[in-house]
Length: 211
Ligand code: AMP
Image (cartoon, rainbow, N blue to C red):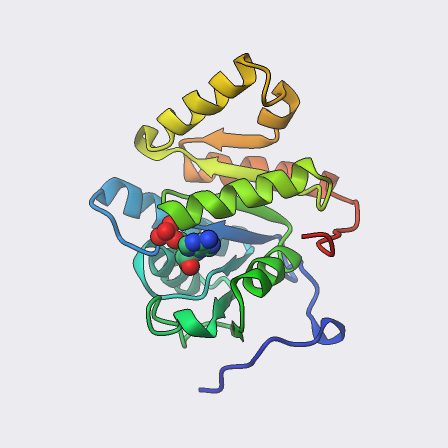
């Protein structure tokens, strides 16, 4: 199969899938040790197919990333992957996607993923997932986009992180409004529903030129 390289901005497709939203999913490049968390990742993929939404993700077959992508494809959702060339072997670049964009840098990856998405969600993952979540959250705080951001807190995986953010609010380093930008839910279906309700309110043009 042909793996297209990064298209120029003029060639880029619209963010929104024909029948619904385009959801950017950040999640683990490892499978982890919890069948419950892996199951929740697959439920997000299946939910996208059921809703007629599109998946945008990191483009690999590795870990929970691959689980979400394969579940979404099996459920009929278009899937767009964006992966740096240097990670093609490490994260097992997925050659069965609707589109796979092979880019040169991590920065290009994150920007293209954001440009192609109407909403963002972080599923359980490791350092890369946390970095992506906080980056897109701070991009919203800075006004680079106004799209909804979700966190799938299955089995309390993110409880300690959320406690920490609450502590930062209590101590005056994060405002309650900044904290409230993150939609937290333990149910894949409920979280997708919330993001779907909030996404139409995001009407400001993106500006990632300052990232
Ligand atoms: P992880 O949660 O560590 O398994 O990584 C999930 C995804 O985050 C992988 O596709 C990584 O390539 C990606 N990622 C994005 N930014 C970074 C970063 N700064 N460091 C490590 N991984 C990253």
